[in-house]
Image 1 (cartoon, rainbow, N blue to C red):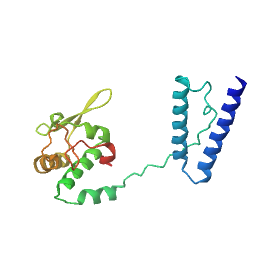
Image 2 (spheres, rainbow, N blue to C red; image 1 turned 120 degrees about the vertical axis):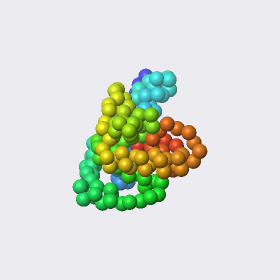
Image 3 (cartoon, one colour; image 1 turned 60 degrees about the vertical axis):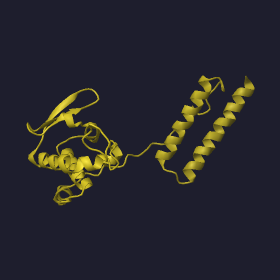
Image 4 (cartoon, rainbow, N blue to C red; image 1 turned 90 degrees about the horizontal axis):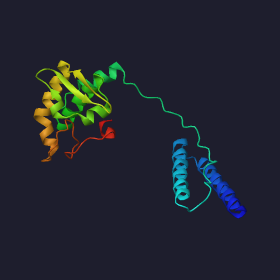
Length: 181
């Protein structure tokens, strides 16, 4: 029992030295924090499955991760984006997505939006959230952009794939949140 405690204490010191090494190597606080979280999960798993009696990572302190300030698009930047009259398939899709987001539609709602949820004739769309759905009116600019995208670009971007998702990537698959940004 005492030997196990000594081994865990020594191993805890090694982990602390490793975290210090990461800090001195210039790793970001987010990277160090993710590394510590991974170590904790690893040792939690080991302890639950009988490989160790005590978790040597429990004394590790994760550094405070500073949140980067979000960049808010200015009205001038938005007007510049919307003034681009691209005719490529991607540009038609991106313009419709930007206009949808200008109406307060979230990226997650965009990637889950189905063709069956969009009613251009009556000017609304139903957005599916995690807990509930909501109905949003479609502005005339968004309606115009959606009609152009749905009639001219979406079929080309699908590349023969079949999906009910409105906004697809260049390979015909669903967009990810990162793909939206």
